[in-house]
Amino acid sequence: MRQFYFAEGGYLRYESNYHHCKDNENYQLLQTDIAQQTLKVVDRSFRAFFNLIKAANERLYRFEQIRMPRYLNKEGYFPLIIPRIIVKDGYFNIPMSRKFKAEYGEVKIPFPERLIDKNLKEVRVIPRYDARFFEVEFITEVESQPAKKTDKALAIDIGLNNLATCVSNTGSSFILDGRKLKSINQWYKTRKCTYYSH
Image (cartoon, rainbow, N blue to C red; front, side, top):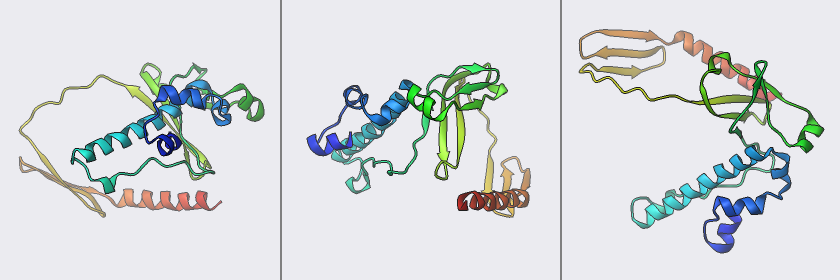
């Protein structure tokens, strides 16, 4: 899509881009659903880029703030977006092409029991720290709950040692101690540095 923009100065739609990319080596290593989701993410990014240009032409946005979507680094990693999964014995397999599976084998991920009855929209596998480990996000759909109207309000002042100092318009107040969270955060950062250095 980026090359098309440089060559033609226009927007290459997802439907057209699919026919260009389906014979690509990287596309064929992915399972079809995941490869199509990757193309859709790129399509959304470019649609947003062109919408910003349109807004700038109507003087609703500044041109200097607009950045074209960039290429992924050559050694970079992109999230896998899986639109549907099959859960078996508490696990689901990461869908992959036959070629990739033959070379690297299957990958199974445990499925959280609390999500068994939920309406699952997609699963995202996000690489962290040069793919040294991965985070898995389960995206579910729930019906929105209407907000209850009230004449009460709470003001929150965020801090460090005191995580939050809160006072309401009814006169009550309380303080959330932040020292425990600060300690956990310090431990987390130490562990992160350890993982990143190996």
